[in-house]
Every structure is written in C-alpha cells, then in structure tokens.
Length: 511
Image (cartoon, rainbow, N blue to C red; front, side, top):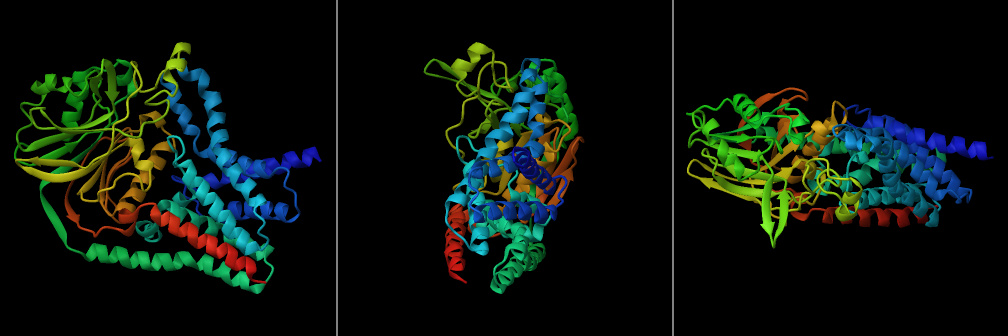
C-alpha cells in the first residue's frame, strides 16, 4: 500500500512538472488540458471515495513539481557570490516546497467543503486555486510568478480580457477552461456536458471580441511626440556589483550604445542599477563624459542607487532617477517592492551575524520607498508623466498605481541574475500583462534581458532580444481610454469570486 501511495505522489509531481511546459518560453498551452484535468479527476475521485487523509499532500506535491521546474533559475543568482553557493540545493528545494503550501491548502479545503456534483466541484477547484494564487501574490512580500494564466501569453486576442478583469480574474477562468475536459469523464448528466462544451468554446468568444478590439486600436489615430524615447538594452556583466568593473568604462559603453544626436530631442532610458561604484549624488562627478554628446535636447532616466541619512541611520535605495544633460537631478522614485534576500535581508540583524547579506550590494539591505507616485517631467523641451517600475515590481497585478493619469509605464530591469535561463523570458511576459491591464504603453530597458516597446494591447511593437545590446526609439503612440481594470483594480477579482460562488451553489442543485 505504501508503494502504491508513493507512486501516486510521484504521478502528481509529474503532472505539476509537465504543467510548467505551458509557460513561457515554451508555451505548450494544450498540455494543461491533460495535466490539470487529470489532477482534478484524481482529487475528485479521492474526495468522492472519502479518502481525505492525504488531502493537503495532493496539492502540495502538484505545486512542488510545478514550481521546482519553472523556478529553478532562481538558484542561478547564488552562483555570483561564492559565499552563497552552498545554499543552492537548499533554495532549489525550499522555494517550491514553500509555494507548494498554497496548492496544498487548495486541496485541503477542496476536500473539506461538502460539494458533491462534478461541475460544482470544478468551479470550487477553480475558485480555490485562483484565490490561493491571489494569496501567493500578496502574503508577506508576495510572489505572483507563473500563474496558470501565463499559459496564454502568446494569445493576445484572448488576453484582451485582462483590461476588464485583470490577471487574477482571468486566472480563475483559465483553470476552469483547462479542467473542463475532466467533466466528460466524471459527468453525472448531459447538462454538465453542455456547460463543459460552453467552457471549451469560451476562448473562441474571447478571441473574437479581443481581435475586434485590437483591430479598432490599430485603426485609431496616432499621436507623434516632439521628442524620442530611446530605450537602451545592454549586456554589462554583473561583476560591476562586486567592484570588478570600471565606472568610466560602463558609462562610456552606455553612451556609445545610446548614440545621442545633438539636434534631436531625446529621453534616454538606461537599465536598473547599471552604474557601478557611484550613487545618485556622485553621478554628477562624471559630467565631463557627457559634455560633448549631450545638450539641452537630452534627458536621462537611469536606475542608480541613492543614499539618505535619516535620524543618524544610513538608508540605501534602489532608485529610478531623472537627470538633465548636465546630470542635475530632476526627479526620482525609490523602489517600493523589494526582492527578499536579493535587495533586503529579512531578520537582517540576526542573519548578518552568521554571514548572510543581500545579494545585490555589499553594504546593507536596501530600504523601501514610501510609495509609488507618477513622475511629472516638465522641462524646457519635454512634458510627460511616467509611472516608474523597477525590475521585480512589474509582476504585481492591480497594485502598481492608483492614479491612471500618466503617459507611459517605464520599467527598468537587471535580468543578469537569471543567467541564460527561462527566467528573463518569464519576467518579460509580465510586462505584456501589465500593458493590457493598464491600457498604457510600456517601455522596458533591461541589462542582460529583453528590452521592448509594448503597446496597450500587449503587442510588442519593437524589441531587442535577450543577449543583445542596442537601442530602440519610440515617439508615435495611440491613446486608449482608461480600462475597467485600471479604474477598479482587483475589485474585479472580487466580482469573479462572487460569480464563482454563485455557480458552485447553482450547479450543486441541478440533478
């Protein structure tokens, strides 16, 4: 009996692992029809036969297999500092083990709730898993990476629904869609088959509406700016974080990539934390490098660390800064959402005593900014409002702005921590989702990653591929009205939750 149980657990782990193939960059979407349906059938049959003793473990093993195979690349960040290399096997296991708890709670609650009808159980499963994903994205610092919804990352027409219900709402629909073939096997009546067919046809409806919406957007009038936004993509090694790269060489390389024209009004977007051994205030010391190639027609938006002394305590920030051509600071934004262990060390006073430190700097943890506000740039030759997002902040749905009165989302990033893995591709996909949700153009400048211009419909208009350096220009945009999700945020997720509760109880009455 024990051997059989171990084989069952292995089977569930394999289902979770195979589900990862539906995510970027593989995008084998149809595999979810098998893996998620088979997993749902498995737990439904166990529930039906009252075998509840391992209810938590069923979900945990599925989640463990899923996250182990799609988040392994996190351990690559530990290879840059030899002091952390011993942690690699622990992190490889601990992260999927922790995230698997959310899936374990899903199956535990699934077994506890006394719903009997197959179709009601499908909606219950979708609701519980979708809500667990929402909790995963918000509890503690939150980590909403690789929701099932990202399986549709290459289907932009279908993704237009994001502008109404957001990623979490869409995620619940996706789970129902992928689990619906299970009803053909566990059904009790023909009515359930009809609903199952309607679920399977729902993407066709979403595709049709989304396609029409995208065509209307393409036919709308464009507005040309009197300045260019030039997005820089570089591949400067991470050695600069450990003092092995010369500051002058890095700045000269970035200027060379930028190719400034003295006659053209240009805002240059440089990646996150790109300048080594210099903070926000010290950048002014390198003005001599800019004198010949930059003038009043130029502004620089750059990721560079900043420093403050508050009540005799030093505070360091991961900061997006806006400079004029003489490197006078115009405006800045201090990153609000920090990466645990990467940018700050939880329980730092304790862990620091045993040799731990944050990965991205050698002094102390970054401090978090107070709030994220739209940066207004009103200089002689420029007038625009931008929403700044630094790296990891792009992954949060419905929690990136309160005021939609801005022109562009600016996302600067350092993807070198992911190495040559699936990580940069997954990270980039979040930008597409945020652009559609907000109905805004998103401009992304990445070092060792993917840089791009993404329009409000999620279409990548211009792109610099992973592993390449160069620049892309943007100065021609279409204006889209504020989206429903942009206006109400994750309140739309609550609407979907209420809808699913209604469906659960409604179909549980149908005989």
